[in-house]
Length: 194
Image (cartoon, rainbow, N blue to C red; front, side, top):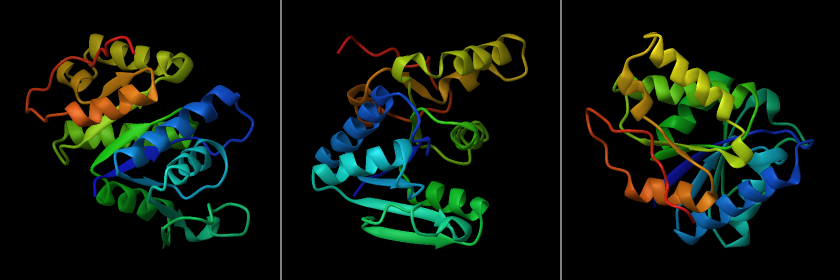
């Protein structure tokens, strides 16, 4: 079973459209019979995606550090539930378990997780697909910063080819399906209209 890691917010205060996108993404992962690996949170984008997976009878693997393993934080219906000692070990476990990564809207933790898997791929430490689900243009400014970083030669031009940017959950799944690793990479993925 292919395992897809979803990075996303734990905030419950965000606009409903973000929850809807995460929930739909979870449904689509389950329809493909792909398991979802996530940070095991019941709130925010994490919880919405997990509920989407389970609404279609799918499988979720939650990974949480010990200090967060307290009532009210974990998603209690995880099919597999892994507790790590630290946040670093949590990230490592999620990366090791996963065949691909999708970043949905989130905060600093999401940005850190996304940048880590991008950096590791640049350094050829993995060959996995990385997809940024840009719901409502959430990541536009971060993507502009990435472009500026390349334009001003703080990163090589190939850095822009190690991830794919999409607008909809369906496009995120399609990007993983169509993904083929190449040493030289390509351009940022431009999806066709849905």
